[in-house]
Length: 197
Image (cartoon, rainbow, N blue to C red):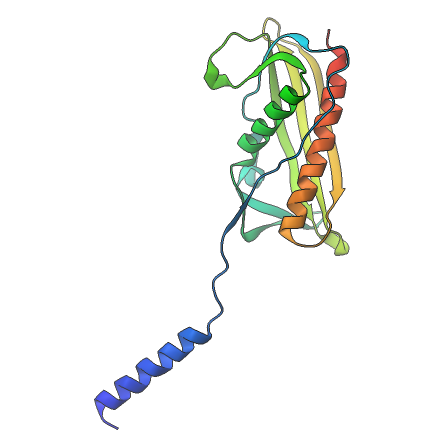
């Protein structure tokens, strides 16, 4: 076999190998949506609340979606990401939920640089798809505190946790369950705001 023939055979085998390789999965990006809490009992709180981005420590605030395989082990999905960092994504959803519920006279972001009466401080504790022991459920835990800007002490502080069972084992089904779990937290939070006069 000549060098030219060998080269042609090598190119042909490489081309055939490339044709038989599995296609590379496409990156998919998700948002948490759907929080539609009832209006605040007693009407809007007098004043403006500012909602900065929440805190998220370590891998919780990375865009790769987390899944839990045991009580002590978390992993990240490949090719499945949040559309934004969770701290910013949940900030946006909290703002939308507070506005829908008409919980305050106004709900603003820090970049608006407006005078505010209250500030919402939050930290994401858990945002994970629990697949341990054959389960498929979304687990969300968020610590939220409301404080008056004129004072140091928070007027309300609580850790909210919710779980929602996914309709299947897929990431897409889990994201729908994340929306449901976050909706429960938003409704509980707005309900607790009734304590603020």
